[in-house]
Image (cartoon, rainbow, N blue to C red):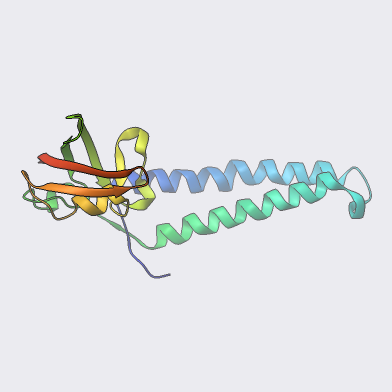
Length: 157
Protein backbone atom coordinates (compact mmCIF):
# COMPACT_ATOMS: atom_id res chain seq x y z
CA UNK A 1 0.00 0.00 0.00
CA UNK A 2 2.15 2.86 -1.19
CA UNK A 3 -0.66 4.97 -2.60
CA UNK A 4 -0.33 8.64 -1.76
CA UNK A 5 -3.18 10.13 0.25
CA UNK A 6 -3.75 13.81 -0.57
CA UNK A 7 -5.04 15.84 2.35
CA UNK A 8 -5.32 19.39 3.50
CA UNK A 9 -3.27 20.65 6.43
CA UNK A 10 -6.49 20.65 8.48
CA UNK A 11 -7.16 17.03 7.53
CA UNK A 12 -3.67 16.00 8.65
CA UNK A 13 -4.18 17.79 11.97
CA UNK A 14 -7.50 16.00 12.50
CA UNK A 15 -5.88 12.66 11.72
CA UNK A 16 -3.01 13.32 14.12
CA UNK A 17 -5.45 14.35 16.86
CA UNK A 18 -7.51 11.19 16.36
CA UNK A 19 -4.41 8.97 16.57
CA UNK A 20 -3.28 10.79 19.72
CA UNK A 21 -6.72 10.36 21.32
CA UNK A 22 -6.86 6.66 20.47
CA UNK A 23 -3.39 6.08 21.90
CA UNK A 24 -3.74 8.15 25.06
CA UNK A 25 -7.40 7.82 26.02
CA UNK A 26 -8.89 4.79 24.29
CA UNK A 27 -5.90 2.52 25.03
CA UNK A 28 -6.14 3.35 28.74
CA UNK A 29 -9.87 2.65 28.78
CA UNK A 30 -9.43 -0.71 27.06
CA UNK A 31 -6.54 -1.63 29.36
CA UNK A 32 -8.75 -0.85 32.35
CA UNK A 33 -11.54 -3.06 30.95
CA UNK A 34 -9.05 -5.91 30.53
CA UNK A 35 -7.77 -5.43 34.09
CA UNK A 36 -11.31 -5.37 35.47
CA UNK A 37 -12.26 -8.52 33.57
CA UNK A 38 -9.03 -10.25 34.63
CA UNK A 39 -9.88 -9.57 38.28
CA UNK A 40 -13.04 -11.69 37.94
CA UNK A 41 -11.06 -14.90 38.00
CA UNK A 42 -10.75 -17.75 35.50
CA UNK A 43 -9.90 -16.28 32.09
CA UNK A 44 -10.81 -19.44 30.16
CA UNK A 45 -14.52 -18.89 30.77
CA UNK A 46 -14.56 -15.11 31.08
CA UNK A 47 -16.63 -13.57 28.28
CA UNK A 48 -15.98 -10.06 29.58
CA UNK A 49 -12.22 -10.62 29.27
CA UNK A 50 -12.60 -12.03 25.75
CA UNK A 51 -14.69 -9.03 24.71
CA UNK A 52 -12.16 -6.58 26.16
CA UNK A 53 -9.27 -8.34 24.38
CA UNK A 54 -11.21 -8.22 21.10
CA UNK A 55 -11.88 -4.50 21.65
CA UNK A 56 -8.13 -4.01 22.20
CA UNK A 57 -7.34 -5.84 18.95
CA UNK A 58 -9.83 -3.70 16.98
CA UNK A 59 -8.39 -0.53 18.52
CA UNK A 60 -4.85 -1.49 17.51
CA UNK A 61 -6.00 -2.30 13.97
CA UNK A 62 -7.64 1.14 13.74
CA UNK A 63 -4.52 2.89 15.07
CA UNK A 64 -2.30 1.02 12.60
CA UNK A 65 -4.60 1.88 9.71
CA UNK A 66 -4.64 5.59 10.62
CA UNK A 67 -0.86 5.66 11.08
CA UNK A 68 -0.43 3.96 7.71
CA UNK A 69 -2.62 6.63 6.13
CA UNK A 70 -0.67 9.38 7.88
CA UNK A 71 2.57 7.92 6.58
CA UNK A 72 1.32 8.20 3.00
CA UNK A 73 -0.07 11.75 3.26
CA UNK A 74 0.98 14.47 0.92
CA UNK A 75 -0.33 17.86 2.02
CA UNK A 76 -1.89 19.90 -0.73
CA UNK A 77 -2.74 23.57 -0.65
CA UNK A 78 -5.68 24.97 -2.59
CA UNK A 79 -3.75 28.08 -3.70
CA UNK A 80 -1.23 25.85 -5.52
CA UNK A 81 -3.90 24.46 -7.86
CA UNK A 82 -5.35 26.19 -10.93
CA UNK A 83 -8.91 27.50 -10.85
CA UNK A 84 -9.85 26.80 -14.47
CA UNK A 85 -11.12 23.25 -13.94
CA UNK A 86 -12.34 21.04 -11.13
CA UNK A 87 -9.46 19.51 -9.17
CA UNK A 88 -9.08 18.11 -5.69
CA UNK A 89 -9.91 20.85 -3.14
CA UNK A 90 -12.13 22.67 -5.64
CA UNK A 91 -15.34 24.12 -4.28
CA UNK A 92 -17.85 23.48 -7.02
CA UNK A 93 -21.35 24.91 -7.41
CA UNK A 94 -23.52 22.78 -9.67
CA UNK A 95 -27.10 22.83 -10.81
CA UNK A 96 -29.09 19.62 -10.97
CA UNK A 97 -30.71 19.91 -14.40
CA UNK A 98 -33.65 17.65 -13.46
CA UNK A 99 -34.94 19.69 -10.52
CA UNK A 100 -32.86 22.91 -10.86
CA UNK A 101 -31.47 22.51 -7.33
CA UNK A 102 -28.17 24.29 -6.71
CA UNK A 103 -25.63 22.20 -4.82
CA UNK A 104 -22.16 23.01 -3.55
CA UNK A 105 -19.43 20.45 -2.96
CA UNK A 106 -15.79 20.51 -2.03
CA UNK A 107 -13.81 17.70 -3.63
CA UNK A 108 -11.44 16.06 -1.17
CA UNK A 109 -9.53 12.83 -0.69
CA UNK A 110 -11.34 9.72 0.47
CA UNK A 111 -9.84 10.21 3.93
CA UNK A 112 -11.41 13.66 4.34
CA UNK A 113 -14.82 13.02 2.77
CA UNK A 114 -17.77 14.11 4.93
CA UNK A 115 -21.05 14.35 3.07
CA UNK A 116 -22.73 16.29 5.91
CA UNK A 117 -20.15 19.05 5.36
CA UNK A 118 -20.54 18.83 1.56
CA UNK A 119 -17.04 17.35 1.27
CA UNK A 120 -17.17 14.57 -1.30
CA UNK A 121 -14.43 12.21 -2.34
CA UNK A 122 -12.80 12.59 -5.72
CA UNK A 123 -13.38 8.82 -5.97
CA UNK A 124 -17.17 9.07 -5.48
CA UNK A 125 -19.38 8.90 -8.59
CA UNK A 126 -20.07 12.66 -8.45
CA UNK A 127 -16.43 13.48 -7.68
CA UNK A 128 -15.16 11.36 -10.57
CA UNK A 129 -17.64 12.95 -12.97
CA UNK A 130 -16.70 16.51 -11.97
CA UNK A 131 -12.91 16.10 -12.01
CA UNK A 132 -11.25 17.96 -14.88
CA UNK A 133 -14.43 19.71 -16.02
CA UNK A 134 -14.82 23.47 -16.51
CA UNK A 135 -17.51 26.06 -15.81
CA UNK A 136 -20.48 25.63 -18.15
CA UNK A 137 -19.86 21.94 -18.80
CA UNK A 138 -22.57 19.41 -18.11
CA UNK A 139 -21.78 16.05 -16.56
CA UNK A 140 -23.88 12.95 -16.28
CA UNK A 141 -23.42 10.98 -13.09
CA UNK A 142 -24.48 7.40 -12.60
CA UNK A 143 -25.61 6.91 -9.00
CA UNK A 144 -27.47 4.02 -7.37
CA UNK A 145 -30.77 5.87 -7.84
CA UNK A 146 -30.20 6.36 -11.58
CA UNK A 147 -28.56 9.14 -13.56
CA UNK A 148 -28.10 12.76 -12.59
CA UNK A 149 -27.23 15.63 -14.90
CA UNK A 150 -25.28 18.55 -13.45
CA UNK A 151 -24.10 21.81 -14.96
CA UNK A 152 -21.01 23.38 -13.39
CA UNK A 153 -21.79 26.97 -12.38
CA UNK A 154 -18.74 27.98 -10.32
CA UNK A 155 -15.31 26.69 -9.34
CA UNK A 156 -13.53 28.21 -6.35
CA UNK A 157 -10.66 27.40 -4.00
